[in-house]
Length: 269
Image (cartoon, rainbow, N blue to C red; front, top):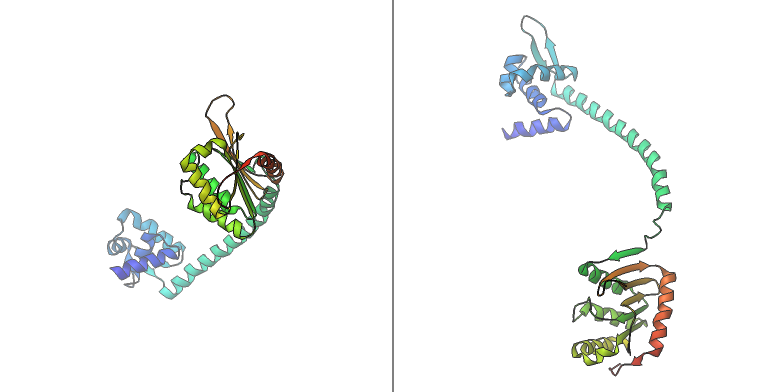
């Protein structure tokens, strides 16, 4: 039974329907069968066997002998498989011609689509805290030369922020710059100051300012992550991730303006 099932599946892979494969296998076991005998031998419904036999005759896998009761015989398996393979090859050749033509039609459309860009596709709007934290981690990982930050609570990174410290060490060892501005009020928060000390030990330069306009991260004068406080709904913000060197360069100048007026921290270098 397992061998027969495997053979049926193989015949189906060559294009036969299941009933067709079962009837053909039944017919090769004897010189000829009537339709009723073939249905019984192949375990195919009697009402279906005539359509199945007609299909096999059209495929030239079975021959019919008319008479008072028509009988059916299978062609040799070698010939049957060769005919099935020929049909499959014709199908593959046809699909290959269609695919080549389709590729020729679609390629210019794809090329044209690459030339069209959304005027705002360099801006990503984030509101989910988890997505904001992930994007913050991304911008740190992408930094290669410089990382500038306006640090305002609430912080999205975990308190230990081991990944952030690793980024600071990497940039510091490579001769890069990592600078962070904190609010003056952070000096009164032991947890925040412990954070500042750990990052300073890794190579971050820290200063303090009485006020910071928004939360901001700038990487390599190219990538920006910033909070945009809602001017109407107090406490509501929208976070933007922007990949725009011109804007990042302007914000970098603004950062250094605040940095020059900031007070150095009393943390170890």
